[in-house]
Amino acid sequence: MTHSIEIRTLDKGEWAVLRELRLQALTDAPAAFASTATRESGFAESDWHTRMESCSWFVAWEDQHQVGLVAGSAEFGDSPDDRHLLSLWVAPPWRRRGVAHSLVETVAAWAADDAATSLSLWVADNNVPAIALYERLGFQRTGLAQPFPTDSSRQEVRMIRHLGDPPD
Ligand SMILES: CC(C)(COP(=O)(O)OP(=O)(O)OC[C@H]1O[C@@H](n2cnc3c(N)ncnc32)[C@H](O)[C@@H]1OP(=O)(O)O)[C@@H](O)C(=O)NCCC(=O)NCCS
Image (cartoon, rainbow, N blue to C red; front, top):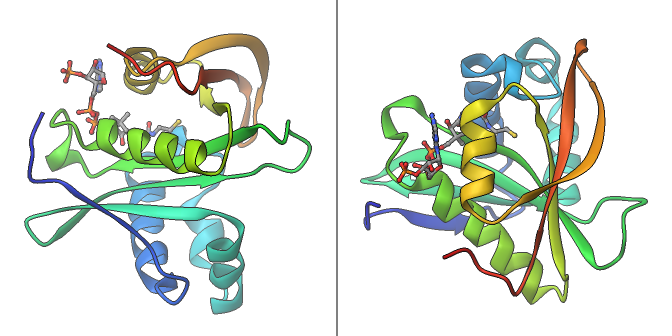
């Protein structure tokens, strides 16, 4: 794993950074996300402010480049002890260098600091790299599955990591 990655929390005013990274992610990996670049490129500034408020956003930096994004949130309807990881993306040139590992561990630490006992997520069941990453980092399949929001011919599966059980 590279050691020059820095993870920073986005301040509420940095909505334009979120917009830039999110549109890059949706353009690069449309099959991975439950939204589209077409939809989000039409968002007004107020929509991005709402996005900023609804989650805690974390950006990975390496050598002055913004190389990855992830969010953590408390999802309505979930257990109050659970937090949700979403919108994970790493720019292609920086993959397989531990960036996602650092981003996921940042969200796990954020959730634990918020007194959560678990961190959960949804992932497309054919997203082999992401599932390998999550399993490597201690997430397990819950058995829950549902149609993928932007393509009902595919399924997404729910995974959970119990906090306090860090991976090896
Ligand atoms: C999935 C994704 C976030 C992984 O990012 P990354 O920075 O390359 O991942 P890391 O370097 O931290 O990988 C850590 C471990 O995860 C696993 N892993 C990551 N990418 C993998 C791949 N393509 N194939 C198999 N295992 C993989 C490996 O165990 C890896 O450890 P190793 O490199 O020592 O073998 C990245 O490929 C991506 O952004 N994909 C498109 C968006 C996406 O699918 N997001 C997830 C939505 S749920």
